Length: 202
Image (cartoon, rainbow, N blue to C red; front, top):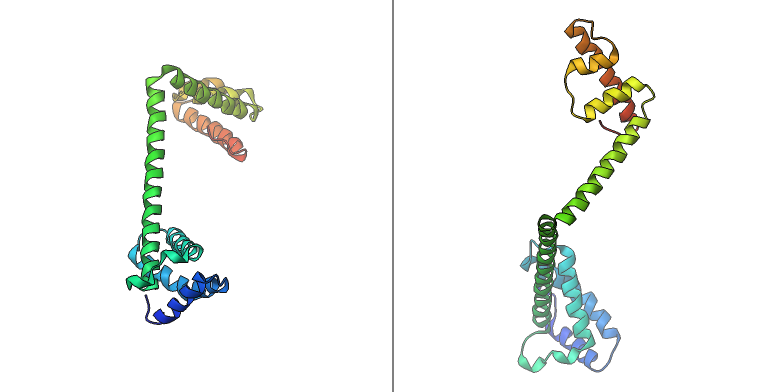
């Protein structure tokens, strides 16, 4: 703790708290809270600031609610007593957070394992994904007013890549292959532009 914290002043506040003086807790918080947070932050430099703050405030509130837990006869200064209590609180909070993360990871693993082990669960997920994909594709189709554009999009969604298949729909199969490629590309670009305006992607 910084030297500006007067042990006699702190002891006086402690005795006032023990006597039931309600204003003593506010004076103590003003005097010791910030230096206490600074000291604990240095002990846990990689920890979240909110965790440190919570640990220190809880220690201070607990002490103010039960000031007799501090035994001045043991010759341990009050600031050191509060520092130890704050450090213990922060360690408990960090352990609790680590346990929570471990539980979440275990739960996630269990769900994944259950889906892998339970074919029914896996089928339900797959069916949901298929239905969602179908809804998206139906929405894209509705945005295209030209039946040929709809046929081209349908082929693309099926994974078709051959220029001849698209050229046949466009009625340009009689053209040289390079001309077919350019015509197909123009058609695809036009379709993409329409879909992008609506936030879709083929």
